[in-house]
Length: 109
Image 1 (cartoon, rainbow, N blue to C red):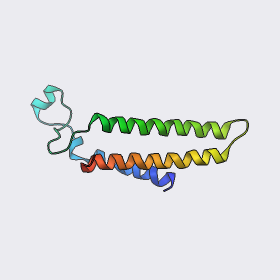
Image 2 (cartoon, one colour):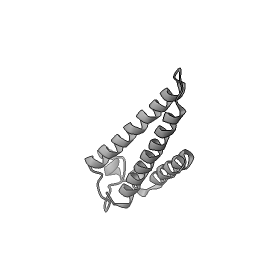
Image 3 (cartoon, rainbow, N blue to C red):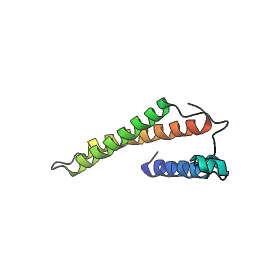
């Protein structure tokens, strides 16, 4: 998997979430007045704190890896081999994140 295909997959995942009927704004007056901005999630599993924690861990690892790559490539003695290894780990972490999000969307956790 390339970085472009991973980014494309993440973009498609985000588009699918935006198109979900669960992301639509509520039109019922009582819901609007109560401050609930979207329709209730009936029939869908709730996202657990473990799911959120897993997502946060992967996002943190991805950010740290990207920062490491910048350091590897912009230092006084650039190290492209280390940057390549970090990039490979980043792609694996992005794939893991995509699979976690896909699993949440399909009800598998």
